[in-house]
Amino acid sequence: MKVLMWMGIVVLVVTVLYILVFAAFAFYVSTPSTHNAKAFNSKASNQYYIQDGKVTFVRNGNFFQLGGTEIEGADLNSFEVIDESYAKDINHIYYDGKPVAGANPNSVELVTSKINTNSVNSGYLISGDNVFCYGDIIEGADPESFSYLLGLYAMDKDYLYYDIDIKISRKAIPTAISNATDGYIRHGEQVLYQGHIISNDVHNFEVINDKYSKDSFHVYYHGTIVESMEPDNFIVISPYYRKDKNQAYYFNNPIPESDPNTFKVLNDAISKDQKHLYYEGNIIQNKKSSEISRSDADELQKMWMWKPLHLDATTVIMVPSDDIVNITNNYYAYNNEVYTRYKKLEGVKPNDVIVIDQDEKVFTRIGGQIFYHDIPIIGADPDSFTVISDRFSKDSNYVYWSEHKVVDASPSTFKYEDNLYADENELGEYRLIISEY
Image (cartoon, rainbow, N blue to C red; front, side, top):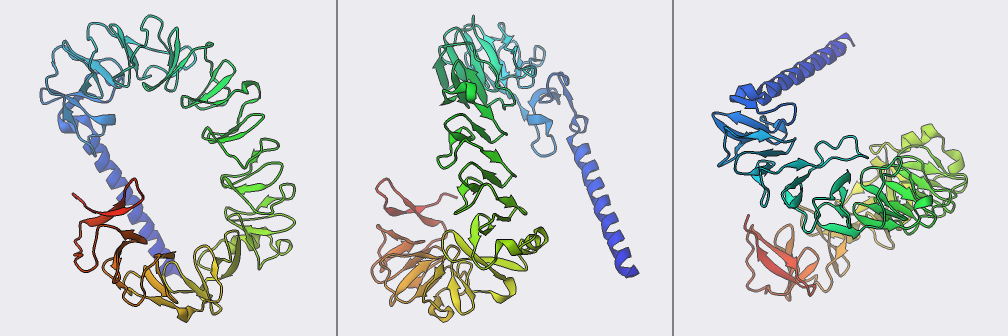
């Protein structure tokens, strides 16, 4: 026992020393002076440096992994930093080390915000008659009335802007939404998320967390309506589970037959209500909800002890992992029955599943049907079927890529090469392509 304890201590000490040495090395290599470099203005930006008498851009100051890139043509004597990403010299304005087309270094105005206290590095800049966002010009923006709001939102007298691609006719002065990320903004009666109108019910709009929001009509996930969810009584229970007035959800997937009034989360994988026990939102057929405590659920979550086998799309059984035989990565044998990742194969016995390629184990035959993983290769002839590679196969009639027929390949003349694959065209046909890599 003492030997094991000391071995553990030695391993811990060695691990800590390794981490400290690596951290010290990384810090040394990342230090600008190690690379004969000095920041132009370290308070404003850690990305622009004088290095060996040249102007150098180092993204995020990461000398260790990324190193520096010389800004060709930059004038060292007149070079100065504007903010984290913008800089200028006598000839150009630069964004992330690259000249900004259409910008005038003699006319520079940073755009800050009254509703975003952290707007010093907004990405917006006015130069001459143009407005820029992240170094790109915003076509048609009015520099005289232009102001920054929050996130990627800005406005002028006529439009509300999101980045350089989205602009919306202004109806009101946009405002921030309480407890929301900067992807949201209120525009009159509208709520926008990442530049798109998602709700016209602003007075009942509520941000729940960084993923979910709702109004009187819908629940939104990252600004997209979740059709199955009802806003009434909607709550996020845990990172994995939610519920509304009708049912519970595993992520955004309805849990079949679930009762929201008695639903309880036992751990990340196991939940229950008065009717059923669930594994990742699937009904566990062979376990009773009333018999499973939280400690029992923690045991069922241990994948090395228990495995869910799907009977169909919504129902599983939990069985001891040691009792399962993996025929392939897609077929499992248990109690002389065969299961795929999504369903039980009725009437199929383990000996009925013939593995065609013993190395990769991705092609199988069950009766007269050939499968790639567990997807049928429609029309494949089992008598003449042969495997060419981990993706290519053929029979006497066709060449196949995964489960798809390749229309421009003949089985009698086809020759496999390592850089060969197939891809789908606009007609839904798969044709051969030679990779350039």
